[in-house]
Image (cartoon, rainbow, N blue to C red; front, side, top):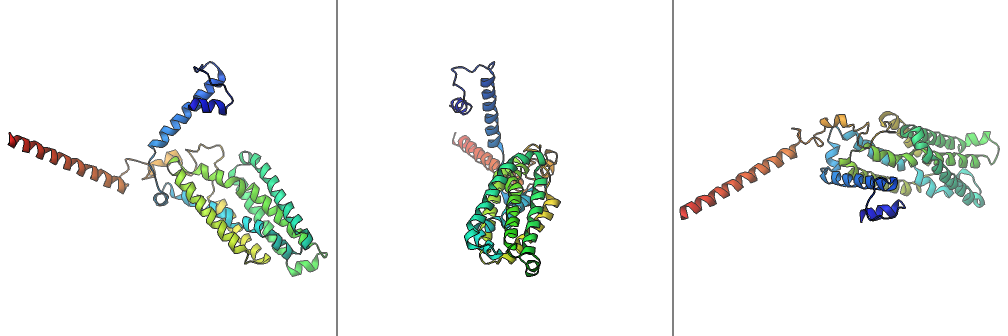
Length: 310
């Protein structure tokens, strides 16, 4: 059955017998072998909860970095600005008849940036794109704050502050697509070892949605100027955090990330089965020993009773 599904997936006819001399069938057989080994490996991996990984010295950095990056992706304000773009553009001075056009142009630029960003991820690297995106987002929010200021409006020709704000918002959205939008979940999938990858990504997803809810719900109570101040400050703090903590993972194996290298697994009480620092492992061993002793005593008692009966 597995060969049938895989053969249809790769556009090959299902042969009665596999002939490894044929390139397509050999590749299919090797793919099935890799999948089978991955499934068997996944079955033997111990289950580690996120709360346990948070207190593990080897896994702690990756867990907190992932949660922080997932939160930063939404707290930068992207969904709030996209959801209330018409009202924010109106505050910037765009005419009501042009609000829909401005929002449509910004959304179209977002789509185009997303298409091109997929080609840059492996060329530029994850860290550089995250830094570039966060920096441009910070600058864009600072420029919007400048253009909507009354003193700046007095120095500019009438009617130019609104289009300038739209251009800056478009730069903000495109920078998000190149950085946080394209890289975040790819980077998160690369920094966790297999033992905690599933639970950690689930936790990051929960944090990401909670942050999105806070931003979309809270933006409606902000003016254009206050929104630019808040989200600009978040982008600046995120830029500093990215510079300090984010490590490049381009070209690295998913099971040998620079944040959780195989060479450092010995320092993890959770990933090292024979480590003396695992309290629950000690408790489990003690319980097993007690069970063996009880079983031995019960067996001895039964044997003694049988001898007496004879």
